[in-house]
Image 1 (cartoon, rainbow, N blue to C red):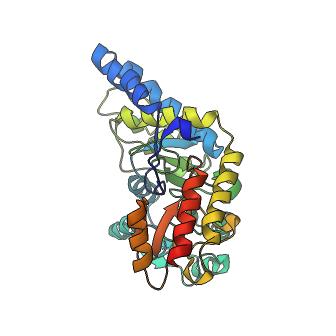
Image 2: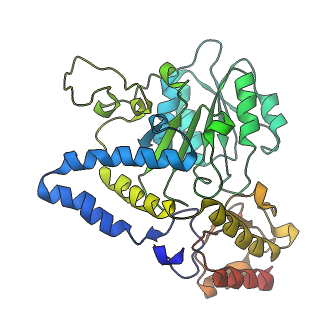
Length: 363
């Protein structure tokens, strides 16, 4: 794995930005700058979007028609919420305070359209708490697959099922799980899934996706549209607008092809690798880290089935660990919930063992 990426020493930040694939720079020179220089530009850039849709569909096991490229998760969520406006009887959006803050910011703005926020009470890992929070007023249920602050993997399939029983639409945020643990919208019976490739997929910033189940699509009327949302973007009649029949109705205006060229290059690397083997190796290396952390300091789950790609550590006294990490040059981040360290398949075993020894000496 390491031979395919530019991996800094002691890099434990893939939950923020995945390492650069070695093929990406050449792909951008050839497929982005090349057509720009030659004047072919859009004729050669347009197929990039179709390639991205095909590749992303394979990664999460859906059809390309259900995938729409997006620039970020926030924009994708905004487009979904405003494509299905609230009714007098259903205007509540259910979410969790464990969601990434951008989710709360977007949902808060949806109040301007008549929605109301409602937060799940109690442990979000307990599906019963979600069931208790749903009612005949619930319009959307937003579920984060892998929590960014703790790395817990939420029981998405069960909660999506509860949302359907309640007559609500489910939206799954897979930003911290795609490329790390299995993301399967069909198995979950999710109505929408949004995610990014900037983290574990190593796409770089700006290449995100919106999945919309084909049975939900006909009911969606996005308001944030542009000529790429059109059934025929090149019709060029200002008085004629017809939404694309597939998920591209969520696209919007003129795209930047560069992020998707980078994403396609990364997907080419993943296509030649065994996903199950990668996930197994990541889990084993995370086990090494977790085993070096006492129960009272470990925030993330010990069991790999319940855990995303990150080990979160929160000692009572943070100073010794903080200082030892700095001396060792460990690339990580620190939040209120604790220090976060992510493992990727390109993370060498020696780096994992070194970090585990720092835990043992500091905790």
